[in-house]
Amino acid sequence: MSKTLLLEIGTEEVPAHVMPGILSQLKENAAKTFEGLRLEYKNIRTIGTPRRTALIVEGLAEQQADLSKENRGPAVNIAFDAEGNPTKAAQGFARGQGIKAEDLVTKDGYVYAMVHEVGGRTSDLLGDTLTGLVNGLSFPNNMHWANLDYKFIRPLRWLVGLYGEDVIDFEVAAVKSGRVSRGHRFLSEGDFEIASADAYEEACEQQFVIVDQNKRCDMIRKQIAEVAEANGGKAEINEDLLEEVLYLVEYPTALCGKFDEKYLKLPAEAVITPMRDHQRYFPVLKDGQLLPLFITIRNGGSDFLETVQHGNERVLRARLEDAQFFFDEDRKKSLEEHGDKLKTVVFQEGLGSIYDKAQRLEALAAYIADELQVSEQEKADAVRAAKLAKADLVTGMVTEFTELQGVMGREYALLDGENAAVAQAIDEHYMPRFAGDAQPASVAGRIVSLADKIDNLVATFSRGLIPTGSQDPFALRRQALGIVNMLK
Image (cartoon, rainbow, N blue to C red):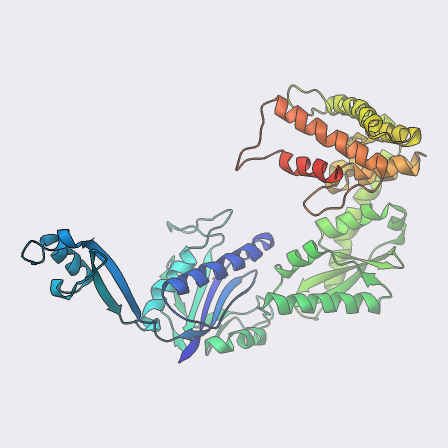
């Protein structure tokens, strides 16, 4: 016979970015634990929301598997005296194995204890097991609360432990387990009982909690697509943003908001970045062009959506007003004129300013272009892009929205009348920004990217800041890999 086991760890809201790691860690720990306990099961799942992390073990056996093993003891000449009587060594070994000395078996010059251990009842083991699983979780940051000498990522508020219909009694940080969970903060009636481990997900859903993250993700995708289509566009769904939003809500409802069309005169990234990276909104496009719309996910139902929409529109309006202001101020100077301010920005201690770095990039770009035997035009584009590549770092737009470095350099270069190859290289010189990112597509972009990464490596190594097995604060390994991949 077997039953389903449920462990639910109820907390205050856990940061979205750590939830996937917690769920993965709990699943891995549980698999190792049940293997060590000789408890067979059919499947292990971990599911969760911002306020709960749940472990579901389907088909968990009600009894440990019996264990028969052969434990080797001392050599025969040590275990028995000349008359064949057990020595103290043999007697001590047998006693430690729970058998009599006369029951020892000799084989291959050694004595062996043949031990048979009858498996215990699962229900008797689960209290300590669940306590160990909760305490065994590790986090990048921990909290203390009340006067407890206990650390967890967020304060523990409730614990559910069920094996079939039976409650598993255990306690962590003065919180006792039971069958009572908590519903959605605003939509539910509050606390509710879970009849059995198998009824867990349905019971949560009745209290407006979609606890399975995969089901919740499908709901969010579908709702975003439907809302975008209903408003004449198609949503751009960034997977990183989707995962973050997924772990911010327990009961998702998508809604569409609007913003003034005047902001569409800004570069598209200058509008999308405040929406996506600062407000967690999904932009809406039509035929590749940005529409004055956004989609956001509410943690709740469909009541009073107009009020929620209005509040989000007000917040975004302020963000876009900032973007417009910085853009207008930046355009009072050319990108090259902004570059003069780089003299006031230190690159690294003892290595001058970013302006000095830009001058090195020009020289390096010219050298690399000659070594690669590119055309004179491609060399000229690369050298010009190297001169302007860092200038946008001191613009108001990039100072406010740092994610736009390179992007705004490209846009400002085009507005200044620089040719398209130079503008593209300014954007591409940061590529690849992360593992799996695209390589620079243009010749000039590859040259400036190589120059930038080579300068970073040489400069940092010259200061003795060499990466170690656990420390690489300047991401030198990633940059070195980028160089290798570009030279393939």
